[in-house]
Length: 295
Image (cartoon, rainbow, N blue to C red; front, side, top):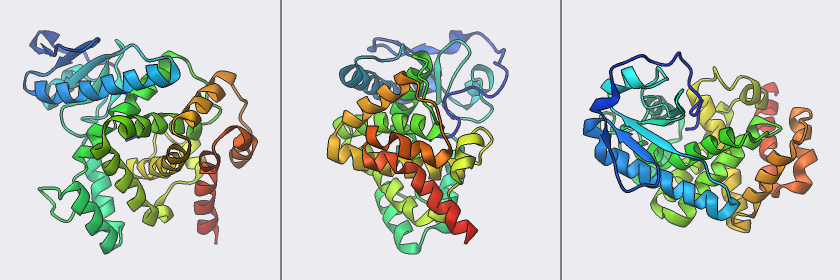
């Protein structure tokens, strides 16, 4: 999730020919995969197509997609990120994802196992299943794959040069696309993402401050980033349950209007009249964490 996922962080690789890739047919965009990753590529491509079609239906605009799904060996030569499985847009415009969940999800699962109250952890493991290597940890593989809609949303943001006045608003847009796609096409995925977001309420003390989230996003520890994104996702769930996709349309309008940013928390108040209340209140969740630390 959600952390640094759609931008490359290293110099593009120079590796062997892509002739070892296999094409996955049946999609209106190019899908290539490592030879042993065809099944994973098909599943991921179906999710990408669902996000593409959702965006086209709701917003009237969708990104141009090309997808590459890589195993660990091919990642070394054909990905622009050092971290295996971290989704990103490569130098040639491909959306590159791992055939397996990103390694960083193990850090998130370990943090949840260490910090969640026992009752909340047991509920999460019951819904997500247990990690085979660590029975007390939840398996987050299902969540990791469900998040492809979030990645597709960020591809659209980049291609359309959407100018959100803050990082949290940009992330709210991407999370809203995720929730909308899952809500209309994948109830099981909706349950996985929703249960993780709800469980994370118990970890508000571990969240980053809004300033950290806004200005320290690139180097931010992955657990911090995920907890911040889950707080945003909870707010999106509230808006989606009450107003369906209307708040997503409003977020797109804000991006296209190029609203100038104000002070961190003042931005939320400034936009309150234009956003669903649960989304406009997102900065307050980070603010409450900051106040708690100060106390």
